[in-house]
Length: 109
Image 1 (cartoon, rainbow, N blue to C red):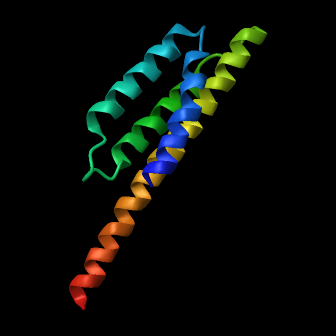
Image 2: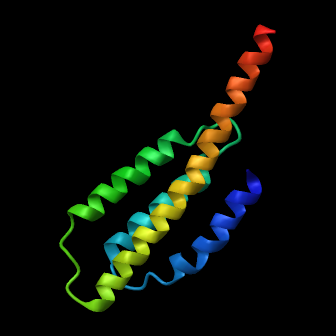
Image 3: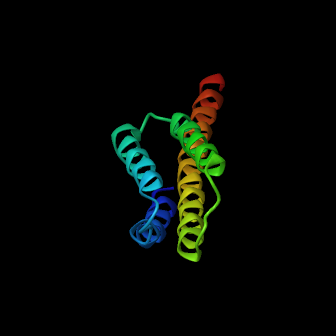
């Protein structure tokens, strides 16, 4: 699990640094990353972070469409980052659920 998450983080770093325009979206991403840093703990299933990610995605989709090529490329990069974060959180979420199921199964035996 950790190895897969690390690979996603490695892929995400250049994506994040390439988001140059769109100040409002950059602030949303920064807030999301800060929240992720503060709240991803071993006993956390990551479901709250997924909800926050989906909420951020909906807000961005409701914004005006990009007007320039640069804005379009930045928006595409932003959605790529959000997909990477979704994968990261899904790995965390599925790992926690699988671990809980294993514990329940062992407790029954």
